[in-house]
Length: 92
Image (cartoon, rainbow, N blue to C red; front, side, top):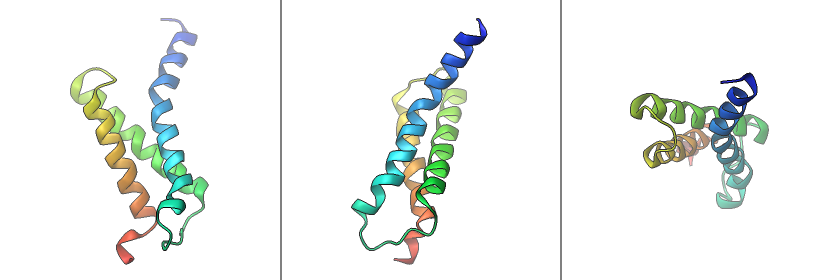
């Protein structure tokens, strides 16, 4: 595999995690009106994307291949949990 092919595979692996993480951080204030963000949307988006990538990587290790729906489901749960923790949702 060439270097460009490797970079292409890594970018395609991380792309769903980054998009979901940033979109959740951007759209969260529209869904939850009462919660005031304790971090900037850049920080929240980065934390969400990191949590999503970790979930996808664990799915890759567990299943041995990328693209399983269980991995994407875990990615969504990890992103929602990360967003709730970053917004301190338990304080109401």
